[in-house]
Image (cartoon, rainbow, N blue to C red; front, side):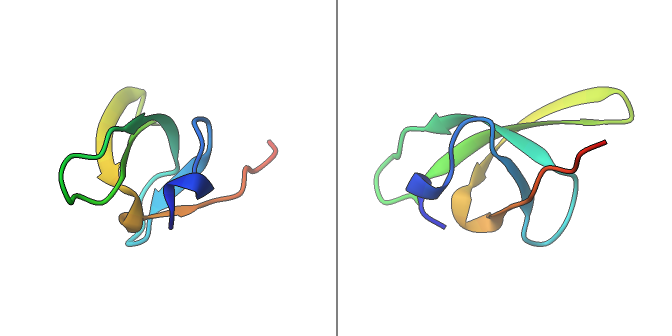
Length: 65
């Protein structure tokens, strides 16, 4: 996946599985590292924020409740 394919607010999930997360910010590339984004998600009423390499993520479709 390329950075141009991800925007703040997009829903993503790790390719290996896990919770749906929201892209909250891009991370400036450093050296030869792959582009990264900051993602936010909730699990059991607890807030999480972590940085992920975009090659480990896949977009997911929003589900209407």
